[in-house]
Length: 416
Length: 95
Image (cartoon, rainbow over all chains, first blue to last red; front, side, top):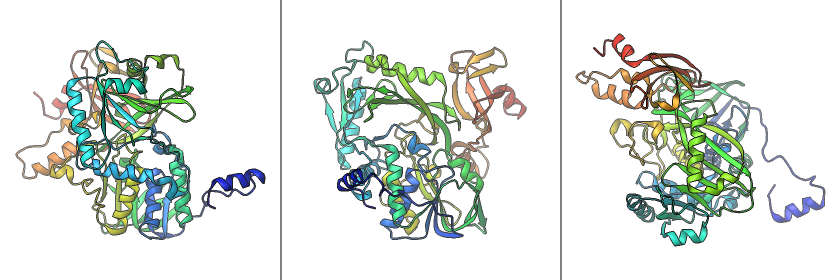
């Protein structure tokens, strides 16, 4: 069923009796050509592009719970391509371009809103660094603009411009950045993939791999063995847990990142803003809640809930930037588990086991990457060669010394 | 989280900074034939378990000692705290 304004009117006039489920609920077949483990944004996007762009069939997405119940439903919904390094910036800019055409491509309202993102500057050194970053973005075809304090005041008059320690001295804006309705991304990809014949199998947990003579033959699941010619892990947050079943150790540690949302307010925050003197980012959802977050908790965790010191730290940063934030009541807070890689950048690659592929290590920046991650992973699965924008995301970059370390932190995952 | 420091008693985890897996104590032999491979594994690969995890915490705003904390990554429950120097010494690392 194609969605359109006309369809909504017709259904409204006929009692909404014509709507169909957006995807099927098939029983797993005994084998597939492609098994994608993980029904999150990246996994569903991979399945969609495998079918759509690369014309593949016999594809299954296995999800242990319900689709979109993991990190695609737990993030702060920001999209942007404001990276510095060559290995990253072309990939994220490609992703942003895919976001721009996503809703028409999927025939699904994902509420892509290019309201702009603004990274605030508080010191001269930061101005130099952000100028360099903006230039790197422009060189890679992205948009970037350095804004003066007056320009920022015109749009965000309520910010704490004259803080004694960290006055706002400017900002790096990417006007094409913004937010997307996160759940709708999973649902849109699921619906589009399903309509191309992809089997989305929920409540199907992968409990192990069947590996013989160095080749992966399929997966053991809570619903029995499913054979697969190519098996693709896409379970960021739980990558180490899953891949340990194939006796693989990864350059990844898992940490918890918390996010927060206030009660619904009238429109106050027109775009996405990030604080440069601490770690704090904030946007306003279309329901009116201020959505914000900060640093991850900084220790290994699979708990999907954080601790109070980080709550305090995030709220202090928020108050330092937006004093009015203190008048809003916090409605909800939650935690998601992040694959923190050793250089802060992701991995989309084959493994040493034939037929077993890996996508993960997204740290806490995976949501914005969803379309490009799906496209590049689909390319790898279909052709056994890396996509042109994902050539740097290889496992062996750590062994070979080609880290993509945006923050320059070294092999210290909790600091990326 | 409260970390029960072997010398100082229960301390708030905020006084500490986290380094990572306690396997970082087991620094490979730089003179070995396979040193490059061993250092790659040492520096970059982690077990990253869901469950009990032995990890290094530094009492940065306290007595500046390193601790080996055994903590459940699913519940954040801390079940054991040792001085990292004792752990290293038991492995013949420190004098």
